[in-house]
Length: 303
Image (tube, rainbow, N blue to C red; front, side, top):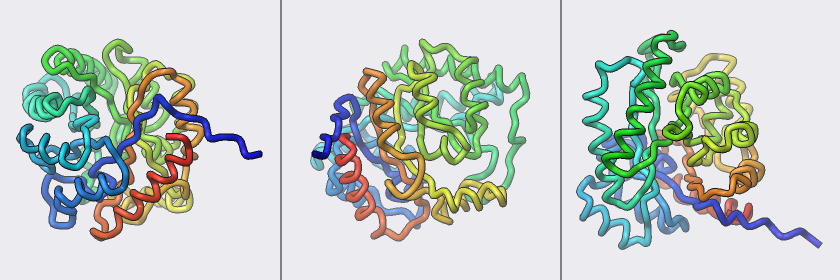
């Protein structure tokens, strides 16, 4: 007798514009926002993220009408920050965060995903700044992130989820652990992106088991190990690596989704698990079939 698939009743699955090849507010190579909303609903998802600010309508009333018409709800907004650069970037950072946080709150979401700025340009792959932070920059990053968490919580009622990401300063296991150890667990938690963490050599299950109280949100993603091996060998930047197909649909890559979801369920808290398969750029007809297969696969895992 085949054992029943365990129910992952603490995991709320969704998807995001990223899985439709959307990285920028406007780009001729991206699908129009109405098509994304239509297709993410058709694929069987209930929850979505806002994606890059300005891709979806930024008027709360209009966006509410659009998502509700398709049976969708918003789980989070996303911001990019460069807090390691110190207090001088605070005002510009807060201007951007306030826009996104305001829309996120208006849409009824509780989470703000915070992605550190890239040290390589995600379009040109040009190196913008050194890959490693100085000790002073680490202090700025930790204190700035804590300040951001306090301000976002007090003014918008949102919790920030910091997203370790390839080609940023919070990427590898060493850097993630250093960041967590330097920040207040009562303020700063992680959006664990399984694909980015694997891309940078990390073990998602180990991170959940070791720092479980700091995992507040998930992005579900896999990497193709053969392409990743070539990327690592050649030092290929993240943008070109994505164009080579380094991020693949489950269950074709790593890490295996079932152990990650089981470990997350074991934390005993409700977690969003948002599918994000980096595909920028991609043909407009490619995302929907992948999204349907991925949703079917995750149902088979119990999510």
